[in-house]
Image (cartoon, rainbow, N blue to C red; front, side, top):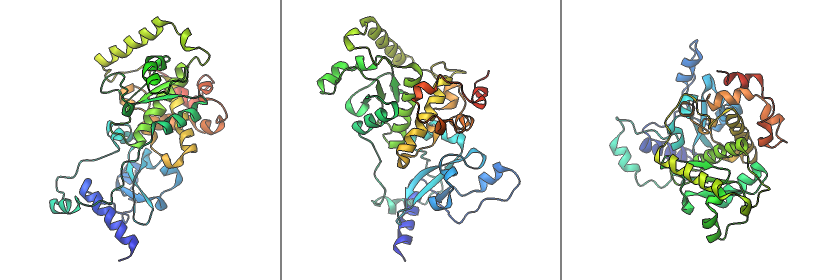
Length: 330
């Protein structure tokens, strides 16, 4: 048995132990008439060598997208196929994990419990996140992580941006030796679940709010009205007491937000293609009452590439493609 085959077998055993279904690269797409049926007949797992660039970027058969799964013993990354709908569900924010099948072989699971071949969770440091935020916005930024002890909102709050959030965190930042004047601040829960894709999706989400709502880069800390900071504090406190529930339309996640989130996602992947994650992780359409990220991505067309030289905060105030405007016509 070759080293490559051993690696593939090891990856398949690991998949069986965790999820109950090994990848099957011998499956082929169905030949039935409808695209939906073709998608259901496609293999759930494929190596990168068998996928097109378009599929890996999130545009597949009937809107399916392929998300990173494992690297085999030969160093090739495998992808798992998920539907666009699946990619916008809460499970996407948990790394697309599935429960083991009921008919899983218990003996195989026990044998694989001691398998130490699984890759450790991929994470990013707070310094790395701040560097990414600075590159994407063009300005220095504070990233307030849960791993550094920050908590804003309720337990359901994965991230937050506010125009004076830096002021609310000023004491803690000064105590840590991090305060360097006013900067946009983004809270990111990097502990639950803590994987890199979720953390970056949260950051892009909050960056979109920054592009939408803005930030006064010229205002010094001593010039920020005390009542403005207190009002933000009270707003956050209320959100902790009354977590929002799914609604028909959420004004906090508007047209500008959706457009900005896709732009930041595309720019992040241009800077770090190795950090790929599906656009469906940027927001949960059924929660925020907005079109799915996939639909927004398609409607924007080549705009992210065309307007790459501009700040995203500038782009959101420019006329949008007609197809994009139609998504938000109610």
